[in-house]
Image 1 (cartoon, rainbow, N blue to C red):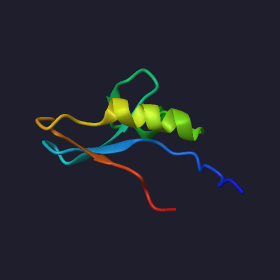
Image 2: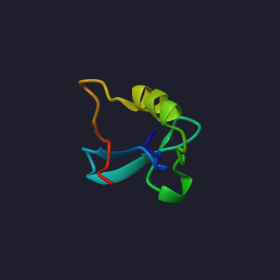
Image 3: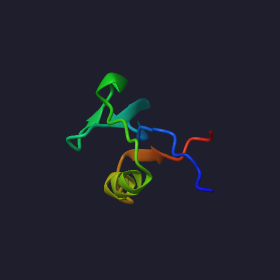
Image 4: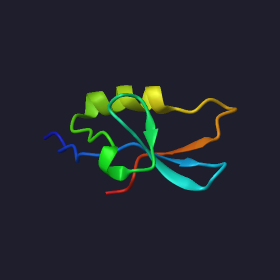
Length: 68
């Protein structure tokens, strides 16, 4: 039996300012959670995580996955 995928948003932390930020559908980071992309498919989530993964010099800390 396959496990049900719970919709998620990709969250990160702006380490320079200490703010929580969310990834939008148009590949921006926003401080407004209402603009966050709601991901409802596990395969799409994997692709979005690859895009969102910060580089070693990035001022972002990616927070994923959140425990259910």
